[in-house]
Image 1 (cartoon, rainbow, N blue to C red):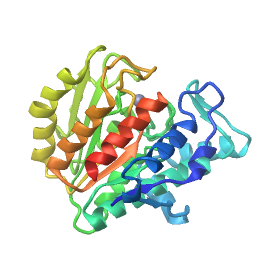
Image 2 (image 1 turned 180 degrees about the horizontal axis):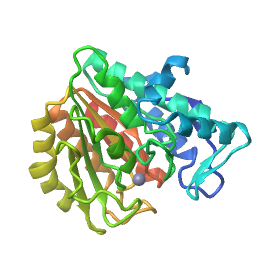
Image 3 (image 1 turned 90 degrees about the horizontal axis):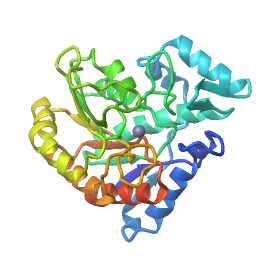
Amino acid sequence: MLPIIYSDEFLEHQTGRYHPEKPERLSAVVTALKTADFAQKIHWLTPTPVKQELMSWIETAHTAIYIEKLKHIATTGGGYLDGDTPVSPRSYDVALLAVSAWLDGVNEVLSRENPAFVLARPPGHHAESNTGMGFCLFSNAAIAALYALQQPGINRVAILDWDVHHGNGTQAIVESYPEIAYCSLHQYPAYPGTGRASEQGFYKNVLNLPLPPGSDISVYQPLWQYKILPFLNNFHADLLIVSAGYDALEADPLASIFLQPEDFGLFTQYCLGVTRKILFGLEGGYELLSLSKSVISTVQACL
Ligand SMILES: [Zn+2]
C-alpha cells in the first residue's frame, strides 16, 4: 500500500486560464492513478484540516509579515505576488492545507517507515522566507523538514529536489541547518537563476547539480552514481523528502531537459536504495500526460 494525501480543495487555488500551474494538473494525475492497474494498492488520505498549531510550523520558515501579506491579498479578492504568482481568494487557505498535507505525509512515512506521496498544490520550492514566487506560496518541503526534525528520533533530514528548476526557496531556508541536507538537479541557466555548484550551504550541506539545456538520462545517470547517491548515503538521513517536480520531461513546455516518464521510476528506485522513509511531494510538471505517466512511474516503483 502507498498512502497518497490529496484533497479536491487543492483545485480551488485558481491561477487563471492561461497559467501552466493549473488545477487540471492534479485532476489528470488523480484520474491516472485511479485507473492504473495498481489502483487498489493506493490508500487515499485527506489532509488534516488546518489548525492553529499549523501556523507555528509555517512560522519556522516564513516571516509573520509575509504570511499576513498573503492572507491579506487573498481575503481582499486576490492579486499577484509577482508576475508569475497569482493569489486567488481561496489561495491562502488552500496553501495552508497543502502544508498540512505535507506534514501528514511526514507522519505517514515516519509511522510506517515506508514511502508516501503528497499530491497537493500550490507547489513550494521557490517560496522564500519573506515572499512567495515562481508559482509557490509556502515552502512546503522546508517546513516539512523542520517539522520532521522535531519528531522523536529524527535527527537528520535530506531533501532531494528533482524539479527542473532550482529550489531557491528551500535552499535559502534550510542551508543554515546542519541537520538538513539539500540536493538539487536543475537546468542551468534557467529560472530562478540560482543553484550554481559553488552554492554549498553553510555546512557543505547543499549539493547543487546544474545541468545544461538538452541534458537527458545519460547525463543524469552518472550524477546519481557519483554525486547524488554518495551525498545522500553519507548524510544518513532519518527521512528523505523528495521535491518531486516533473518539468524535466522532454514534453514539458517550461524547460529544455529531455527526461522520459520511466526515468522517474529509476530515480525512485535509486532513492529507495538509500531509505524506504521517503516523502514525495509534487512540485512542478506542466504537460499533463507525461506528468501523469511520471507520477505513475514513481508510485509503481514504491509499490
Ligand atoms: Zn519547476
